[in-house]
Length: 403
Ligand SMILES: *Cc1c(COP(=O)(O)O)cnc(C)c1O
Image 1 (tube, rainbow, N blue to C red):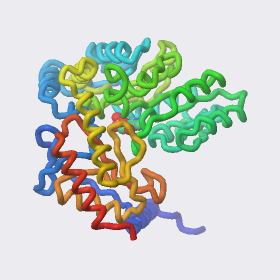
Image 2 (image 1 turned 90 degrees about the horizontal axis):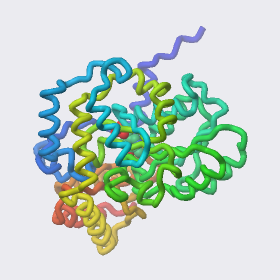
Image 3 (image 1 turned 180 degrees about the vertical axis):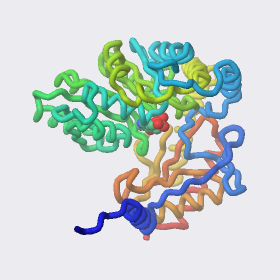
């Protein structure tokens, strides 16, 4: 008998390989400073790496709402929603979300990742884990990991079509006319910033009787009227995209997620999404805070959305004036594609020395040879932050030429 391979050793070897390839990720504690600034290793940095697009995560009024609600509701909800954890604050938030997104019913999850895992598992299996064989799940190749993982968890027939290629999705549907089918896509793609071809996908779904599910983590609060997201911005509604998912951790500045759709779909998710059924409900104080964030995002009395869009325009104009490579994105996500991992890390380190924190995104988060700086813009930034970043970026790129 050969000796049993050791899990610990195998894991260690995988970490070593990753380190040698320059792909090791490191956890680093940062301090949050007012107005979305950070401090790392004693240095004050402008944060161009977060998804806090409207700067709400450090808004004093929301922090006050959370503190006040916590004094009434306590810290934890103590149980799952279907046990005793579902409070009036959760129900009120779900009503606010349904109203905002123009759908019959919304359901709150504790995180976007678990929302996608649970919703896909429920839709693709109607309840039994791993029972998705014979159900087709079409996904954009660049979808968020949690969508891919949801289909894998369900054991569904996962087919990934080339990025943004609704035609390819259509051919996959044509080839399998007699099986139930779900099309799942990011709305705004998290590493590229571009938007899915939603009208074409909605038309396909209608034609082929498939269900369309859009994860709008990065569009909600940023795009569309009252910040309703990319579906609204594309001129589509609940008839076109029956199931919409959004998160609270990005433009809403909090944490958690929701899915919204017609009553029957959402009831199916309540019954069968195991990441909903078996998890502790998010703190009610947080639900109350998210409700206030939704109210603020919709009304946008501070003009944060317009400010963010001015920043997007200023950044893109400034980048093209300086001859910087940009990707075709009109969202708050403005990646600079460099390709090479070492160069990406070197440029990011130099930006940090200049006082700017940007994401250095490497495989496997993005495809091989597509390492990039992921620059995210926020209403919390000022014009001189943007101009300073652009100047620092231009000089860092010049100092680290393509070899
Ligand atoms: C961030 C993100 C998620 C995960 O949401 P969390 O609430 O952070 O777990 C899901 N989908 C997309 C597209 C995301 O960008």
